[in-house]
Length: 237
Ligand SMILES: O=C(O)[C@@H](CO)OP(=O)(O)O
Image (cartoon, rainbow, N blue to C red; front, side, top):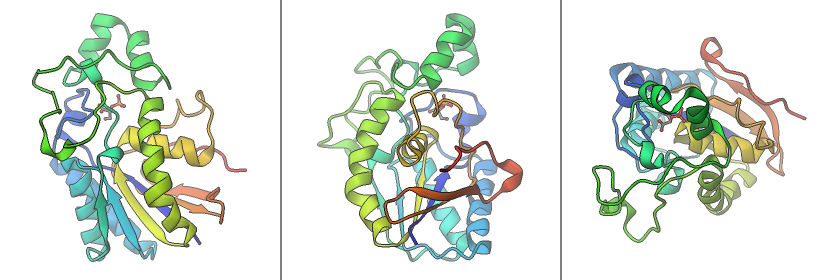
């Protein structure tokens, strides 16, 4: 049976500091490391045997994957890293404090930037501290200067279709360790949520979301392995 485990990275330093993070390569806090380890322990306790794992090119997701696989006793599984699983690029908001930005621009505007489906934040100006174009992990890629959830899905979906979906269709169990918004893009795709329906979906850090799928990759069940830290999930069927 195709089985998918979505794992948002554990708490990062900028989650803690309430800063717009996007593509900045911020590491996990000690709390984030503990969340990732616990996620792996829950995967092990659920008896899940992972065939293959996927992550982004950002340290917080990669280390979450490693910590979880270690705790699950499955560090041997093949893993693939790709920038198309990165967090949504936060454009010109990158690095700013979320509360200060809400004070300056208003809560409603910040909510639009954070959770509207297709309104991107202002673009990131080239050449500044957060210009990723010279970073060799993105060599050869055409990089965005900002992304909405829609344009995030536009670059996640081709990767999903080409690299992930075929392994699910073969009946494998896959772990995807990624980010709040790249995972929300996958949830929107799988659960066929409307542009409004995805707004309310908030994926907790370090809490594995176990999704069982039918042969057409339609979800048949979905639950967080840490029930105490679960958030609302879309209804199925
Ligand atoms: O800052 C970010 O990159 C994301 C994820 O932490 O934040 P938001 O909740 O605004 O999507």
